[in-house]
Length: 249
Image 1 (tube, rainbow, N blue to C red):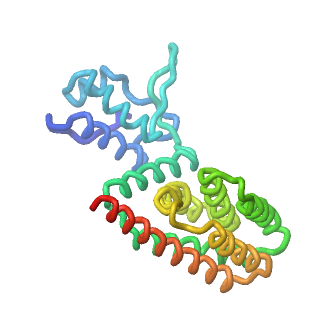
Image 2 (image 1 turned 120 degrees about the vertical axis):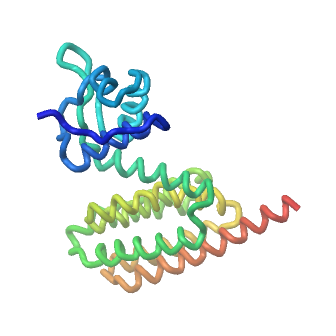
């Protein structure tokens, strides 16, 4: 049975076609692995040129909603985005929102504290066997962070891996997806701004407290250490912005 799509108007036709196809995918009218109509068929249906359809398909491909296949049986097919693709897209969008000022410092800090705090509590509730792997990763990263020869870039990368291990320890796929934007996007942005005004020893101290609390299965202690780390980061962020303002003046 032919799939019915919503009609479009001339303005922003490529976007509207992409939105119409996306809606058909999201509500199940187009199934995963189903072949889309050809470019010519779509152009005739929407009454636009093939280049316009091609641009709409590019938009869907960039969102990992369709994939192309060459050959006699080729064409464009509905794809199922992997969790990694979806998380990466979320992180990229979040980074852009920070860059244009749509997400502010306090919002970043609050989101991180609340979401990662949940991860800390879930991780602390695990038994020793389930927590063994994440704890090993945390110990490795903490030891690496104590190395004075570590460059700022390497320290920041280790910082991200440390908190990714905390999130992964929670064992919750949805939290892991949501936290990808915080850990993989917001945290590097924050690190890039504050690395000149923060003290590594302070960060290592907070991380050490968090690790020790998880080793004791102490949820309150872990969330308290995280809260102090977020407060310190917020303070250093403001100090960095003040220094920037002074240099600008």
